[in-house]
Image (cartoon, rainbow, N blue to C red):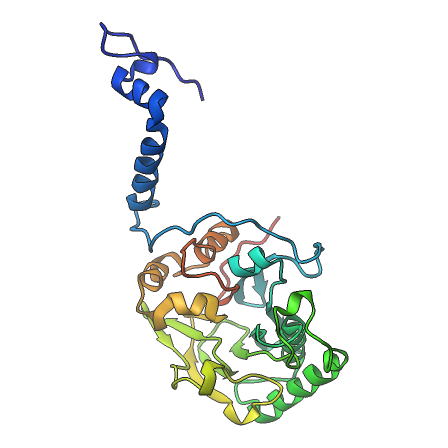
Length: 328
């Protein structure tokens, strides 16, 4: 882009046609004032015609969790189709973990069932109060999506199987002192887990969800969000239920499913901002997620910047029907 200086006019303007009092103010310390004015304008100006969600967070240094590799990324992004169901998924390391140099503790997985009739999706949020929670989350979603699940899968047996996998896979971490990434945590690894099972053919049928912990599931149907597992009050100490220990706190629900419907499973880092489907963000997504967005747009929708939202964010969204065009 080329900037052409404006014409100079008698005595009152300087470079680029700016009034001399602005230029003298910049030279005399007005840079700070001008910066504040610009930041104030940035905070009030709508983005893409939309009202801002809240104040922007202050910049913080970003630290890697001892390094980085593609097996445990700070941002994971996927999209495409499984049979006749369209998928978008993203997981983002939160600002708090970036600042502390801690790993992303959320995880997601989505697969077709062995018989090809069902799409099985899972989201887990490792408890930051436990040691190596990211491993518990990763094991939980992989174990969940490998189960033989249907719309009526026998959830207690399914979650008990996942709990056993989590215990076996994280046994080496039990009894260890809290390390650099434990942030004071010393309890054995634990994680929430929310699972959704929808018909893979995208036709009308029954979908099923189950959860242990506070990772939400929301259903978009006829232009309205429904929170599938509304909060039931806080546990003592404000700690959520989690695997592998809290199998008795399993919740489950079936929903009608068909063309035009969207199911999202998410960690509370994103679910809190959805406000059970009644927040400004949720209402905006009714339109922008009525059909699967491009991956870049999906990432931007999830990676909003607000000063009070600093936890990891994971969203796994399913659209009934074939939406993505095949690459020829």
